[in-house]
Amino acid sequence: MLFDAPPAPTIGASGGVFGLLLAYALLFPTRKVVPLIPPIPMPAWLFATIYAGIELFLGVTGTLSGIAHFAHLGGMIGSALVVTQWRRAITRKTR
Image (cartoon, rainbow, N blue to C red; front, top):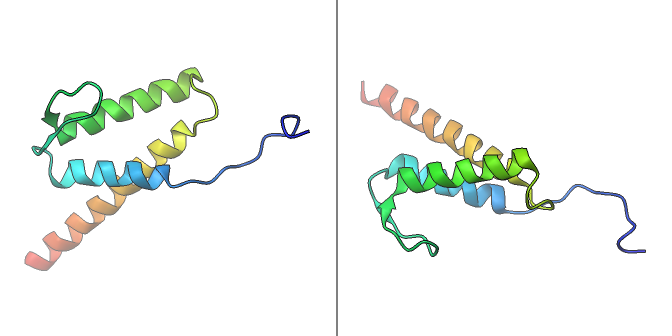
């Protein structure tokens, strides 16, 4: 009976985690990040870009179903909007 249930919306914190990843990459783009796999140091902006590209690919192709790839991307987009607004507010205050 458990596996015959219709699909239902899910909730989680992964969109927020992806938002934090992008905010870090926008605020500190040249800081080095070393992912677990592959352990190659790279700038934060490159890591976030590659990760977003992988999520987009997996979401469009339907690979790894059961994971909310577009929610991850939505968290990144939301974060980009917030950081952009913060930067505009700071720029207006310093004028």
